[in-house]
Length: 224
Image (tube, rainbow, N blue to C red; front, side):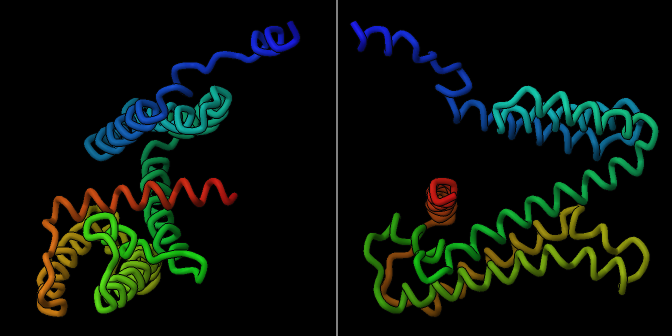
């Protein structure tokens, strides 16, 4: 009787709790739409709508409706009165957040108690790694850590030291283009440095990296 009573008191999970992948996917879609709206139009309503979509995305990720209400109450009035300034601050915040997350994920995997993120991704494809492959993946993880640290700092350095307006270049696709170029160059360098090894395709590499990053994020969350 006590067991039945205890069981009946347990609340059923909502659909957001039962389908976390759907929640994250919808949040990512809303965030992408907000960036698209913000880049295509600087009108007051477009700016407010862009920030409103981001508020909904944050509420989905945090699973707190209060987060949406609080953020909407703070950012929407600002967007209505100062749309241009709000868009600039929003773009800078999104860029810093994305680069900061990537920097943290890579740097955190370099701790002595962890495995380098790229080594984890490579082991998911190839199994146990040879000594030279393990050394290469460790060095490559350090390289991408430094890249994201530089990407995070570059806009500020260009703002203070570069020509007017150049600080926007990294946020307007410069960082993405640099990362894509380095990925393609690294794929060629990898085949020169590591011989007698069955190298994975770019698609397999990206899939393994995403899987390794998701596992690293879960581990970090559980440690916290």
